[in-house]
Amino acid sequence: MFCSAARLATTLLAFVALTAFAEPVAVPGTKVSLEPPQGFTLAKQFPGFVREDVTASIVVTEMPAPVAEIKGAMTRENLAKKDMVLLESTPLQHGGKDALFVKVSQRASGMEFLKWMLITGEDNATTMVVGTCPKHVSDELSAPIQQAVLSASINTALARDVFEGLLFRIEPSEKLKIAGRMSNVLLLTETGETRATAVEAPIYVIGNSVSQSPIEDLPGFAQARAAKTAQVKNVRNFKGRSITLDGMAGYELLADATDGKSDLPMRLYQVIVPDGGNYFIAQGLVGAARGEEMLPQFKRVTESFKRQ
Image (cartoon, rainbow, N blue to C red; front, side):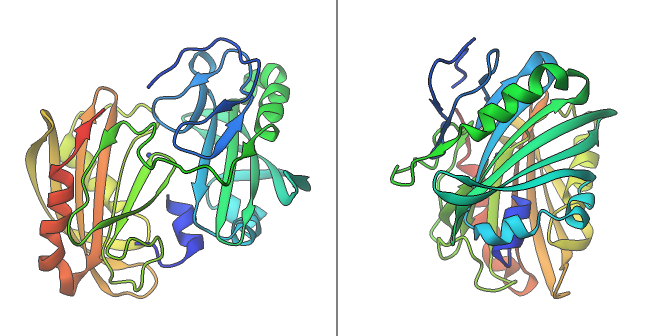
């Protein structure tokens, strides 16, 4: 599923009510602390903060990717592929390191949003802090959000608990080890390393949706979601069934797919479990030749799922 650090970074998911912060607040599940604006609370669905009344947020994402690659990808052309318009790009010093501060606009759900992104890190690790608010409230929030994003500090010596702040727990299997985490998404690989050894190597990701996504037709939604899986194309031959995980009704499907770059045949495993207006999602991807071997491993990890 992930064949390079850049592809990995582009893919990759307890509520504490606070009304004001007088000092930096640690973001659960990360090595980052920052000073959120007044009215922002710690988020449940992702590492960061949210102000729900105006759909504004500050999201922290840590990636096992060279910061130079991530900064280099912040071009007008690459951002346009994600429906973002580059407004400003400013190199700066942050925490004694070369960093990049980017401002973009983006339309989503019929609204225009402004985003401010701080990108910092080192040779094998990148931290992104992204502040977002609707354009119509930017006069009020643009300055506080920018200040909060730039207030981020990173404690590289901190030993991070990979499950801290996640809404679920799972158990690895004998052939799938926990390799790391990106935002609210947990990654498992055969080697326990974030870099896949080959396109055909098995990889398993599990996380939760960030925004509200009411699901009326679960099988149809599952197929549509599988068809959008990063790194593969021509997702086909769907076989699905209803399942129950931790007392919740879900939908499991299998499909054939083709790797987006190498054209190698792949097998895709996916489970979606609605939870109120949100959902949990697990995906396993492996070369078709190893499908029968790894499918029981994907299922074993999924069956260990428990909500927190």
